[in-house]
Image 1 (tube, rainbow, N blue to C red):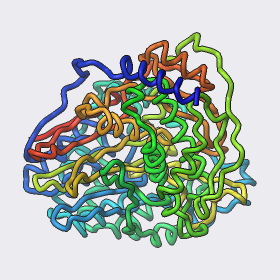
Image 2 (cartoon, rainbow, N blue to C red):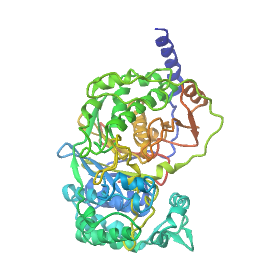
Image 3 (cartoon, rainbow, N blue to C red):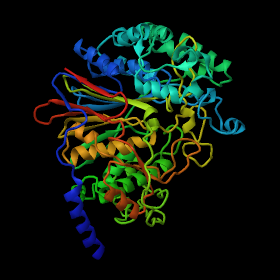
Image 4 (cartoon, one colour):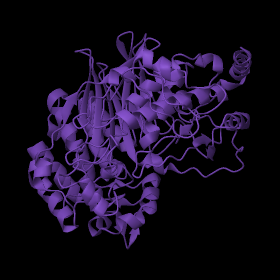
Length: 585
C-alpha cells in the first residue's frame, strides 16, 4: 500500500514536469488535401507525388517511390532487398498485407555455415533470395491503377540521368568504404579515383537503368526466372556464393492476414510472422493497463514501463516467432490477448527494471512466467557517446495516402548498410545480407533451414479509428523499429501531440534481449538521448537501467501521415534524421 501511495506521488510530480510545453518543431507538420508521401529521401517523395498527380493511387505512388529509394538510398534498400507492404483499401474497407521476405538458398544448411565459422555479416554467403521486387510487382498487379512502365518511369529517368549524392549517403559510403571496395562491380559505380563518392557528386547508374527497363517490359519473371536472375546467380557463383537459378525461380511473394489489436478504441495493424510486428502490439496491450497520461510524458516512470513492456514482447519474439511455414503453430491470438497482457503486466515492477533478458511467457496457457530477477541501481551517466546513426541506415520506410484515403505503409531493407556490399555486375543493384539474422542453434525457432524465411525486423504499421483511416507510420532501425514506432504512437494518441511534434520527442531504446544479428548477444543497456532531462536519466539509472547516453534526436527515423478525424485533412511529418521528407498537394 505504501509503495502504491509513493508511486502515485511520483506520478503526480512527473506529470507536472514531463509534458513538453508548446514549442517550435524542427520541421513543420505538412497539411494537405489531395495526397501525401513521406519517405526517406525527397526525390523518392517527389516521385510518388508525381504519380498521385497523374491520377495514380496510393499503391502506384508507393511502388514508384520505392524504386527511386533504391537509387538514392542504396545503403538501405533496392532490388536486392526484402519488403513488407501493409495497406488500407478505402473502397473495400480492408487492410491487406503482402510479404516480400526472401528465402535461404537451397544449399544453406547449418552444417555448411558452421564449417565456414558461422554466418558472415557480408559477402556472397550473407545473401538470401531477395523478395522486394516480387512484392512490389504483386501490389501493382493486384491493386495498382497505372501500368508498370509508368510506375517505373521516374526511377528509370533518375538512374540513367543521374542523381546527386546527399551528405547522409556520402557518410554511409565513407563508413562502408572497406566493405564496398572489395568488389570491383561496386567500386566502379560508387567510387571515383579510389575514393567513395562525396556529397554533391552525381552518380549515374546505367546498369540499374537497364535492369529497370527490363522489369518494366517483362515483369516479375525477368527478375526471378529470366535474364536478371541469371546475371545475379552467375555473379554470386563467380564469388563462391551458393545461389542457384532454381532458388530464384521458385520464389513467390504472397498475401497474408495482418495482425491487429485494439488500443483504447483504436485498431492498430501490424505485419504477421515472420515479422516482429507483434512486439509493438504486445507492448501496447500491456501498457493499456497503466495510466500513462497520469505518469507524464517521458517521465522516468513512463519510460520505465514502456521499456519493460517492450522487453517482454521481445522475449516472446525470440521464443515463439519465426517463419510460420517452418515452425510449430505460433500462438499469435494468445500473445495479443487481454488475458496474456494482464499476466505479463504483473512482471513489471514500478521501481525496478528486469535484469538482463526478460523471460518468455506461455501464451498457450497463460501460465505464470519464469522467475524474474530485478536489477539494482546502476551508475549514473558520466559521459555521452556521440550520436551514431548506423542503426538507422539499415532499412528505409515510406508511406502514402491518396485522395480516396487509401493508405500504404512500406518498410524495405538490404539489412545492413549496403547489404552484402556486392553490386550485381551488369545489373547495378546491391544484394542484401539478410542471412545474418538466422541462428545456428537447433533449439532456436529462427534456426537456418534451406528455403526458410528468416525472422524479419521490418514491420510497417497503420491504424483505423472509429472505422476510418487514422494514421500510417513506420521506421528503419532493425530491433529498434517497434520501440520507436510505439513511442511515436503513444505521443500521438496519449499525449495529443501533432504528428511532427510526436516524431521529434526523445526516445529510449532497450537492448535487453537477444538482438537479431548473429550471434544474438544481449547488450543489456538502455540507449537514452542526452536531451532527456538529467533528473529523468538519474531516476532511470536508480531503477536499474544501465544507460547508454547518446547525442540523438527524435523518435528514431519514423515517418507518418495522420488523417484528421473531422475534416479528412492529411497531416504528415518525419523524424529529424537522414534525408527524410514529406511532400503533398
